[in-house]
Image 1 (cartoon, protein in one colour):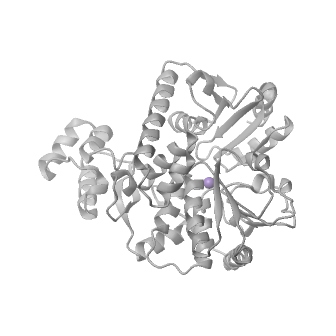
Image 2 (tube, protein in one colour):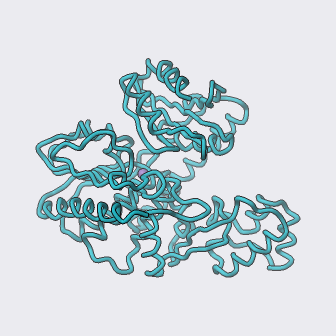
Image 3 (cartoon, protein in one colour):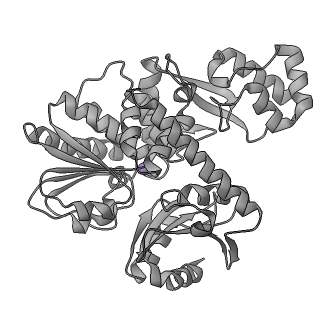
Length: 431
Ligand SMILES: [Mn+2]
């Protein structure tokens, strides 16, 4: 690992911190993205601004292009977005962009871009926006044993930056702080699967290996009627090791985190399920609920749970239609997933595309109508596909007068509805 990029990063954080210090006494506006990463970043920044006594209005947006509609008529901070629209951010007011997406253009003079890609870190795998915001916060506020490392990791999990080997790069910093502060516990080997808070170990075992293996393990450990997050670490590791003796668990175990303290909902002890809860709020227009939950305030938890139930119902319905062959077409080099035929809103098409991509191991292009004039496109690529989704989205979108961008394996675009075919042909030429 090169030393240079660390000192460059420190310099970059210094620039961001200087700007924030200059804003003391001014009211700022914060725009953040509606997903778990954006909401976590928003929660961390709100905490920081409060420490600095900077009054702020936070607004949760579906897309970075929405920033331009709201205007920049005062000091503004953009989180988990902004890198793709830098050239549109010139204004008389200072703008701070804290992001990890690809930044194709130079930043105008009034814009300070805190994006670890500028120092050679991989924003798609090594640093979520929540982590970048966490580092900035750490630069400004003396942190001791706060909840913030958990919030930072939720963003990383939400953006698929945690896998069976744990987190990488800059995401290791909140991880390490959280371990030192004893607010989170790493587990290895653990069940690496969704549902660590909402399924019992018995159910997980049965899903992975069938009822016989479950019976065998229960004969040894007693009834496996608690979710993994509620077991002591040693107990889960022991069960997983025994399980692995009985059958091949390849791919379903690994390194995962459990949040340690008492929380009012089991899901909030698991980073993946917390991310889902936050995502559900953001995807159905109630990002503020997710922001408040990410800040560790439980007053609106019931509302968040309602939104998560709705989210599950939408996904379940979409998957069942897909299973019946509806709303998906095999195109040249990719699968086209049609959100409108699946009842999937534009804010959820990325999630459904991700699921199809994982299940089918193919490049997936999901589309869903935003309004009469605009279509949202989500591109998801399987590991080692050799396709750069971010590049693909931004190039094809530009060709048809839209805006797009993102990471290597996940990207999105908004394009004029009447030029969708042209956009798809453009993708096909590259794939
Ligand atoms: Mn993000």
